[in-house]
Image 1: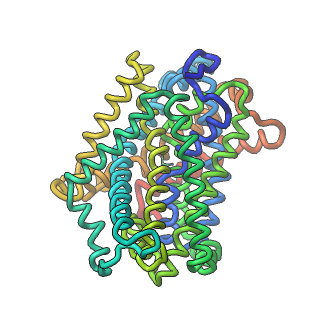
Image 2: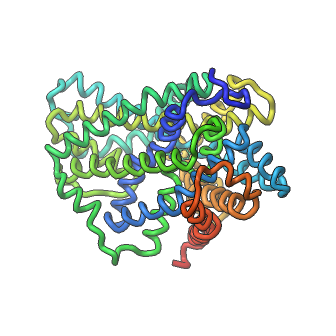
Image 3: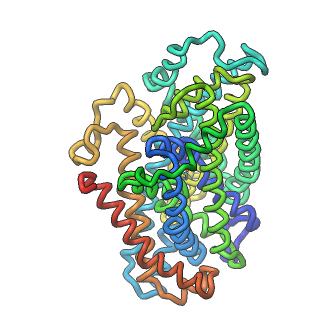
Length: 469
Ligand code: PHE
């Protein structure tokens, strides 16, 4: 265990922190959601606007969250409480972090179900590799209809999904229970480099064997007529999800950072790495999809339905398919670890529990909600927990967890963070933490005080009343 200045367990180095935070940020959001959103929202226009959102809204909020955590050197709620008290502001601001803790827990519950799906596909490609050998194509002997049936078949099988969810949660809790430097950091330090090697390897493979130039044109040709209101909102929402903002995650990770680290620099590095991975993921996936003559598709089907078809027609398809899903699994795991750490750190601070106990309780509760999510695709698909609210009408447990957090809780959490850091907290505290000087400092302050709150309010209004667009 490495202690920070406050005597708590903390990152062993700045690199350890950056890798863990990149591990938190890079996940299913980059690999599944980003390409699918780009496909659903017209390619290049979405991508360009997404990059603007990262720079002007995501990055300033990332710095705001990490500085609250670093200043507090405690769980997210305690860190906000401390900063509010030192700024002579109401302790009610603590609720912004409380909401984040709740969101992180809710995302954890459905995220690990998707992690379980990734395990299932790893299993498919492992057995495929044994059957067809390293150089063989993937899923040999299966007709397109057979492949098409894999994903719906999985969604029909609640018991299998619940079991795989449990396995994914167990692996996650293993790292969280071992602590910050001894568990979370270790996972990131090993898995993130392996992730990058796999991502680059598969992308280079696709660049030579796939339809690379078609993919580049698709992702980077901007047709401004496609930049509509809904596309812009999808881009902002995706930027938040991808950078893990609005769920107190970066506050929690920031609380393990030593005082010698320049947070403006590390926030920039983390955002840059996350955005690069999203773009490379696009350049990894679309060449493979286009080369197989398939069309891009939004939603989860892009990864779990379209890609397996594409792997079938590739040389060494089963090996590439396996490498691909292992890579997705690594990215998902470092993110689920960060999601579990937020409520775990909160429970440790709030109830004085040991890390083992806190992590065990969080994992068990996430499993209960995960099982309900798994069965919401089949046995209890008619159960719509928030069906009485028009916004969540017709949504089962899995979908409701996703949309409540993405459309409401994350933007509210981020909005409150921007207002707290920009308007409420004592300026001297903020200035001593953020690592910025001169014009950049002024610009960051302007973004946090004006642009972020306005943009986030717009997201919320449109999220709640979609008909205004
Ligand atoms: N950013 C992660 C991803 O892209 C998801 C996540 C959201 C993780 C919020 C932690 C907190 O997959």
